Amino acid sequence: MPQDMPPVGGYGPVQYKRNLPARGFRPAFYLLGTAVVMTLGFYKFGQGVREHNELAREKMWSRIHLIPALTAEEDRDQVRRYLADRAREKELLGTETQVYNSNRFVRPTFAVTPEK
Image (cartoon, rainbow, N blue to C red; front, side, top):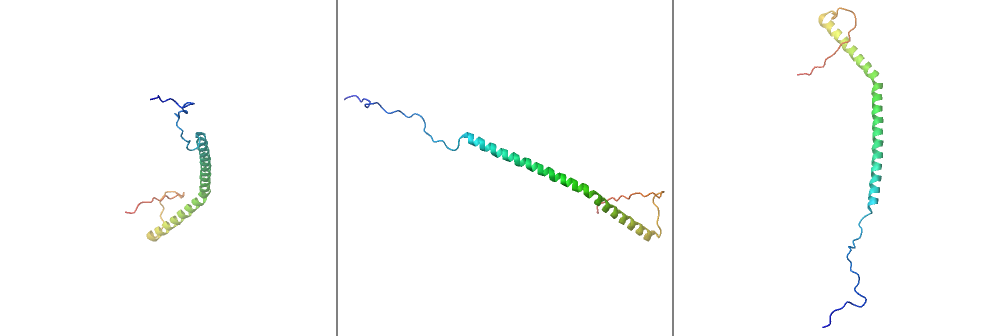
């Protein structure tokens, strides 16, 4: 038997590398996309913070401008209560009594107590 010899011209090259196709984009594209999304997110976040601060400032100034109207309303309510108390006192006692020893006006204070 004759010994097997290589073919004339030799054997073809042996493929020892893995020939896998690249899946997806290159990592640089993913990095760039992430940077773009994060930049847009930070921009929108900054816009939201500015809008929130502007709304808070507007709310504060609206409350400041409402203080005189609310104070006047409270004063009218206290005068109404004061006159009603004096009328009730005169009806019960037949005369007006003086609580304090001076004629100086003392702003009344009302305490709200819970009902039992």
